[in-house]
Amino acid sequence: MTEDLRALVGLETPSHDKALLDAGLTAIHRWLADRLGTPGELHRHDGGGHGDVLEVTYPGTTGEVVLLLCHYDTVWPEGTLAQWPFEVSGTRASGPGAFDMKLGLVQAVWGLRCVRKLGLPAPTVKLLLTGDEEIGSPAGRPHIERVSEGARATLVFEASLGGALKTGRKGVGLFDVTVRGIEAHAGLEPDAGVSAIHQLAGLVPRIAGLADPAAGTTVNVGLIAGGTGRNVVAGEATCGIDVRVGLTDEVARLDAAFAALAPSDPRARVSVRGEWNRPPMVPNPASERLFKIAHGVAADLGLTLGEVSVGGASDANFVSALGRPVLDGLGAVGAGAHARHEHVLLDHVPVRTALLAGLLTALA
Image: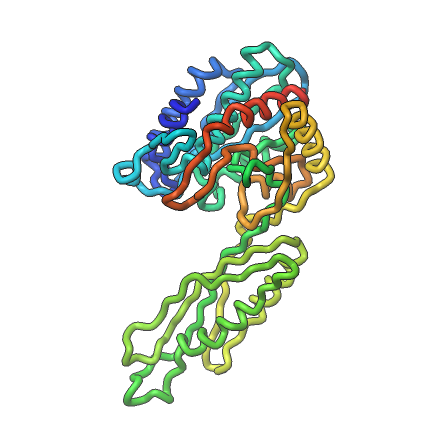
């Protein structure tokens, strides 16, 4: 399994590089055939400008269907491996994408391989690999929502948090607020202009003030740009905003607040563009029942399986929002997602893989 991880990390698959994503998925397809044999069905869906979606079906021994959901894209640009190659030191392995989430893909495949090799009861497994999760799943989302319909469970192989499963995630909104003012010479006719930068600067505290820590809502103005020169009253300025919400009701409140933004000078104009990239993942009854099954399987393996709610979002958000049973965080134990200290702890790999094998058998 460590050598499989080495091979997958060796495939550079940045979310914005279509050529590398295509080559990486072709290699992953060959690897799946080697590890799991010929599938019952296989479809490679065109992702357009994004990574393709690979949908593979392995028939089971019962009528139940379980979806194993993974993404093969990473945040790391081409050339990262040359500076930071895959490395194993004791029980720790590091490399770009190892934690998020190529070890999760390895564990998903080997968990299914275990069940099939041992002849255990197995559901029909649909393995769905997307290539655009890190950028919001614009191509993957329709397939995720389609394939998860009617499934007994959707199991997502994002990394765990210290071994705990992720049963709650925040929803994400990405917005741009743009102010259009009136350009003028800053020395000759300052009063003839309206500075878009000054107007936006007045709005930023109001935008940041939309956060509600008690409700789990965070608002971050992470980008700001505008103007054409220091001696020009700025005609346009924009800020980029990341919003995270833990409660569905917060979506409507923030939508209304953004729509109500207005400049202090009536000659300026404000516009808001953006969308809710992912809805909040709030534990639903179906997912709660699914966690109890997983908790029981873990107990049989001598594990105490915890659950957590986290601020990051994943493709599990889409499934949960439809009221369908989903568990997330079944992937790697380690740390450092999207950071240079990204790593996985290999001594957890066998039992995490056994957890999946036992869960598949229980769901059959």
